[in-house]
Length: 178
Image (cartoon, rainbow, N blue to C red; front, side, top):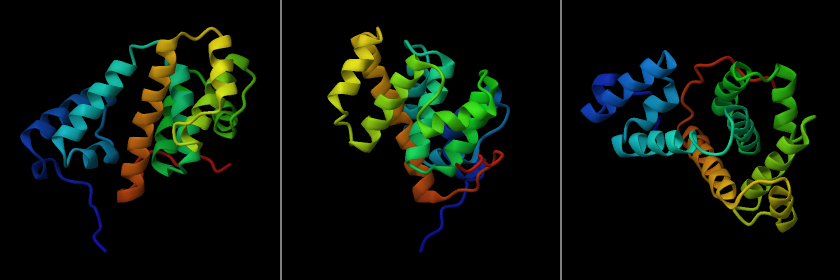
């Protein structure tokens, strides 16, 4: 069985190397998962551009982190759970709230609407429960938000699956088990 190693900067294309520099400036380090995605400059650039576009959408940074946590929990992605637990706490969630989000229920009913729908999108392979879609719109979210939620779920599935396929070392503090 072939083992995927985290590449050294010299082992990737000049395009990926430039993207690595941008990531280091923004994040303060080059996470192993992003480095591994960098084997393909096209995949890394596409992912970073997609995520950056979604970050300027209708969801707040806290909501985006909550979506990342619920999707990563469903997909049992230890890497993304570790990274997004740190990011979620940096956005204002407590450690206890991150665990509640991963369980799919918080004290914030509007956030629960998002979590239930995101969970259904993942578990039902895009065919979300229509009642949850109706609840999402009833909570005041516009149609654009449904498309953006799908994008945020998809972006996290991408990183979850890259980790599942590569099992690169997690370079963030391990997320607490539920």
